[in-house]
Length: 557
Image 1 (cartoon, rainbow, N blue to C red):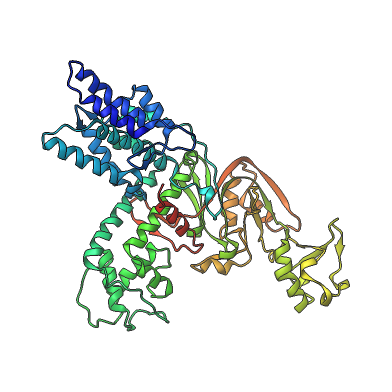
Image 2 (cartoon, one colour):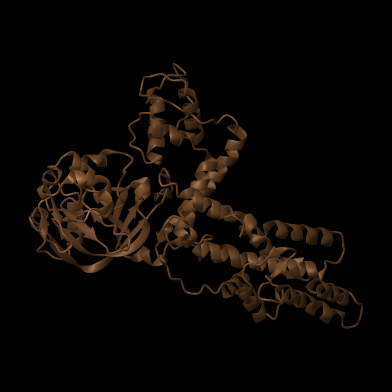
């Protein structure tokens, strides 16, 4: 029915008569209206087989302008229509797919309209209406994706519980303003995430696309996966050295030079290895180990994937956090940052959950500190670790300063239990570790109530912070500098001197201290970002979270 109506309207427009000018003027609006009308709730508006993204916004936009075309005039494409098409192609630098925004159909109609006009023939109103609707819908869809993200994070298998509330974007009004001001680019930039880092990360992705183009001309086919069973140190020789050196040349980490031995790992090459290691979050010690090989194997396409995913993650974050006092934990970087007025005033290494006890992504508010904490051992750890350990060594609980308690809090003597008959799956007691140097929570914990029972705490296992891969916990976050964090948090009260804090950390009983304000805590997982100079940094996706997001980004709308 819709096709028939468009056909009748088109024929009617071509009737030669004194009123033809009025009919032509009304013809395109009528066809636009027909494109947007649907006959049932199940039907989705479409143009040339291309489903439209938002019929509500489209109706509101065109309704306000009586369905007049926005992108053409006198059967010609306006300059801003060409700008819009250009910006659709630029969407790849935001990690999005230009094809999602009707680009193939838009190119088809552009070519058809231009060819018809150059041939001196009349461009059909149905073609002019079609290109108008497609460009408008592309603007609406791309605006929505740039502002809120294409992927719904709550639809993913990986937990994302960082809530954001956004006022209605009113894309229809933004488009009217963009058309009036003649600037599509500016209107898109206005709805980018408000974090300064977003544009820098976007520029970093643009550079990676340039690297990919160069890669396809220079390297494709020769960039094979490298493997080694040993670490290669300065002065040693190995068959993988020439290929690694070529990859350092490609990335600009080394300038080509004459080697004394092609397979020898020399000091000049070591300087390039250190740059590679730093970019990928490794200790820049110059030793070529498994982590360095993994980084050297990454192609521009691999890094484009990583960058695209993390730009999407930024679009999910609430803009409100940019101006707040904030504790930010990037689990992929094993680092905590305490931010005030957009400045990082404190940073610390952290240990996060193992791959099978992954630390979730969420936000909460820190409200209090517990000095000299006890630790009530989770049932899963009692079942899988504590009971088997006591069966091997009946003094285990005493050595670890642990007590057995009934559900009512009464102390139970572990020597009264026949541990050989204990079933770990039905163990009836609570295990509590008392305050002290051995306590698994260390000497202080920082609390921000959440449904995941995740918090930040000290640890007696200080040596683990020297490791590069610090995904070692059961999900909570262990901090290397607990005293320093406590000092920052308690700076509102001059009574909390260094000595008082240290004494509070070494008591025989817990002490809870309420903060004077609730401090937002955001725990996220960024495997790509750039620094203030635009230098890119990448981290290993040890939780394997990136691939699911990238697949969703690459799925058609």
